[in-house]
Amino acid sequence: MPTDTANSVPPTARPATRPGGRWTAAWAGRVRTGYWTRLVPLLAVLAVATHVPSFMRPVWSPDEGYLATQARMLADGGVLYDTVVDRKPPLLPWLYEACFSIFGSLSLWPLRTLAIVAHLVTAVLLASIARGRWGNRAGGAAGALYLMLSIGLSPEDTQAATFEVFMLPAMVAAFRYAERRRWLAAGIAVAVCSLTKQTGGAVLLPVLWMLWQDARHRGVRGLPALAKTAFGFALPIALVAVILTKPKGFLFWVVTGSGDYASLGGNWLQMIGRALGNSAILAAAGLGFLFPLGHRLWVRYRTGRPAPVHGESRGSVGDLGVWLASSVVAVATGFHFFGHYYLQLMPPLVLLGVGAVAASAVRWRPVMVYSTVAATAFWALAMAWPGEQLDQTTQVATAVAERSTPKDKVLVWGMHPELYWLSDRQPASRYLTAGFLTNFSGGKSADSVGEQYSVADAWQTFDQDLMVNGLPEIVVDDSGNAPYQPYLVPKIEDLLDTHYEPVGAYGDTVVYRLKKTG
Image (tube, rainbow, N blue to C red; front, side):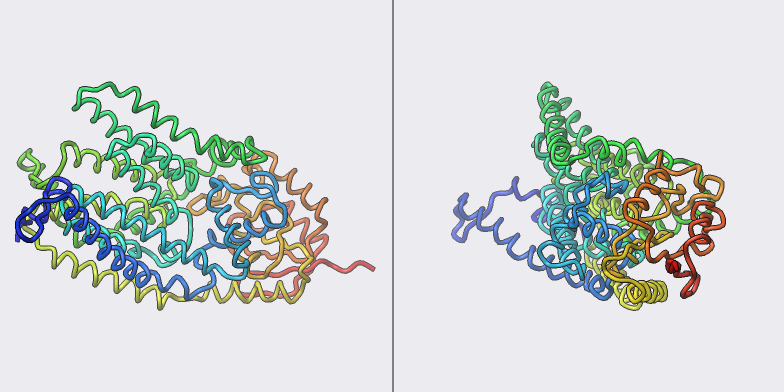
């Protein structure tokens, strides 16, 4: 059934009618308020329902474990980008630290709750954008479709409280502010997005596109708007640099020091397989609205004319297309194609799909039914997700806790920093994973992994950490069959051979304890 005019014309362009036929601004305000007071609670229930599985596990991903360990180190006096390092911006580590200071550090439930709030805010912002372009029905559909799509990947990527989840509200807000020509606010939102994860800065491209379109179509000079956007973007970053005691470290770890991590070298078959696999999973989750979108693009290609969309402002398809393209570039940056990267694609995909449905004869019901069925399947998958790796990690963490005291330092030689958090033990080094010392990351080939590929001066700093903190009481070799196994890294092999003895094996993970002297 074609979209009816009453539901497709933007509410701001449509007068409201009070019984008796009189038009009043007060009645229009009540209509607008009523829309949100009905929609937001429904979206809140849906946000909670879709992310209930996130509370079923103590930790879903290594990123959560890394952030939790960082937060504990910061609470104990660590300095971000000095004695506490990561290749990510500071906002989320600070958020973890704040939650731990209020609720304690034994559980991630406060962060999981805030993640649901972030999803809800993203859904409401998308609903606002869609409502302004295609009407009330499209607004509600955009919010609901986003929340159902937000679990449309591996549960380890969608149920964790990680960077992409907290990046999305600022990303969508930046687009919304630019759409409304609030350039200062748009610049601030882009900065907040970038300070959550670097690739969030890609939303600056559609913001600048809309600024250019606005200047071109309205015949106005765009320099003042550009200045406002630039100032809004620079202001939060400058404030963060002032707050940080090591601004040079911030520049290195967040910007200049990640070149090797984001390099082209790697296992191309693995990377291509991961890219195609996650793309296919996301496409299956959103097929209900992606199919109408694909049909619309096909019609445009065959006829050379875009299908009309009631209430669609000039250039709106273009800005959504630029947003999606910039998000694709962001997902591909570094050529890792991890599943959680794909969360960045969801907002522009949802809006493009909603616009395609609003412009076609496709009924909303089959779109919503398919999305509900797909979301239910992903929800059930999350509830039944196998936990063998988590069980083994928990066993190792328990063994570490039993063989050490809270004052002892621990070294995890691997890529699972959650072991520190689960065992409630402080790391012996600022480098929480072997990646900093070997350049290992998912998809990297063995050719570019080793001591010689470490972050600049990392091994000297590692040695200094051990001198200051003393040799760790426990070393966990969690390398498995990775190309940074101890025998491939002479310094680690020598450390284990000289000072440690194995005290337990759990699958492919070996726990070592410091040899007793005398």
